[in-house]
Length: 404
Image 1 (cartoon, rainbow, N blue to C red):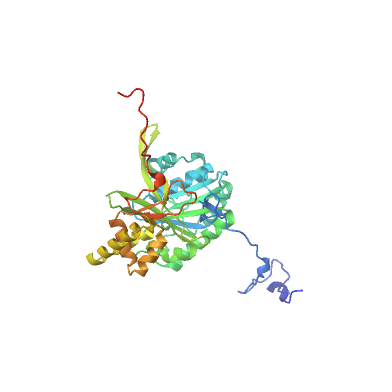
Image 2 (cartoon, helix red, strand yellow):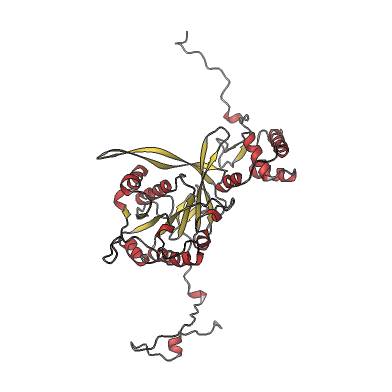
């Protein structure tokens, strides 16, 4: 038998009768035994766990929580929001809602619905009957707009009425009451905490779009505008960046830079922003769409670190280049090695992480997964190296009967 005290509500202890004329109770504490709390597993809106891996080990966006998608201008955050919307409304997003199409409330304050958002949603393949623009009607306010925390109760009711699984807030900070100071974390939290509670209560996930500030170093979370408030409330941060490659091309990178309820260090993804044409009654509409690409070993944090750290001195770079080339070309490695092995050996040789990254770029070392190898790990590979299994056959083909 438990030795825990038999806790009773204050009203019973004080002999309250519960009548309508009862005096309101003063501020007091309510203690709930942990045994009375319902334990629930984490469920994922977006889960990229590969086949054969531990279940939900690659969960990216927790269900019924607040997630932030952040990056600089022109990096495709809004196109990603349309991509996510399309997959939720069609039930094609890997995760808890796969095969279960749900509605999406798309609250946007910066882009035109008719010329930008709606065409992008069509280009992304969304079920347009399940995407809802949200407007506010208020007889006492002629130009009312969705405002947090004022409209949170109405949002929760609408989410349940329309079976909404996702709320896109683009951008999130623009929906906070104008009387709240964006630079005061406590005030922003006071507006967002009820929204997070409503998401859990009414079973919808929030994806808030945010911008990166120009300062803050190489930590993506510290670069998010309003990060002082977001840091305690968001369960994941999806960050976007663009990297200039050695051959002059641009590479877009998307990383999960915060994952409170799941595994850290999940693979980043390359992505592309492709042009798309949507036919309308008034002629073609030219927009762009997000296309998810392959995994990459480069993260947004890596890109930011390269941007915030000036070039290395010539002597350090030369030493690092020579060391990395010798290490990978060594017969013991045969032209390729696991990144962790390279990094560990570089540390032992006195090569700094910055110098090693610069050397990798200088030598055009590739990050690849060997073809034809089951569950292959990423390796750093010299550009001149080709696996025997990947070499074209050197056996000449017999001449064709039609050959001259």
